[in-house]
Length: 203
Image (cartoon, rainbow, N blue to C red):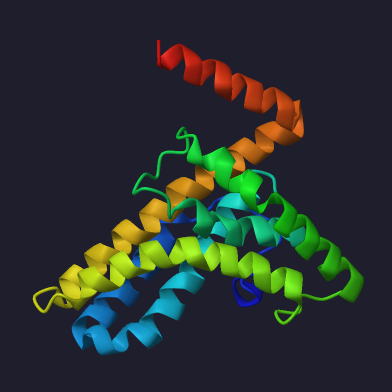
């Protein structure tokens, strides 16, 4: 995340979604050409590309990338994509995941503020990353399984990564749009409006 943030200009509202998708496709093609043995090299590269894309989307929605809470919110997007195969942010799981992680996020932020730097060995941060990793691992497992098919090759690897990055870009756009609305109208108002819309759609 620190590396991804260092490469982002302080100014600019363009989330560069096409650029990030192209980079992810390229890394997927290289990984697919080399086979499943390349996953240990390709996965960190594609994950960094996705983190940068998520951070640019956050920036385009008015988030301050210098704020540690924003960095954690970017990483948190990976946890939003690991529930029951649905990437729809209108599902009840979105707010449930955020609520489940709220205490861990708060404690991690308190620990970061006390130390002045992000220390991955800090217990609160480790617990938060474990929560995110458990959910992200579901999606990664599906990606690795798809790339493990012998006929996948470079074209298939590129297609898998294109779908992978599109999935998380959609989640990031929804997540940071909700956060922008919460900053403007308050969390309670946004949640009540969400519940009202959801109730009207089910009737």
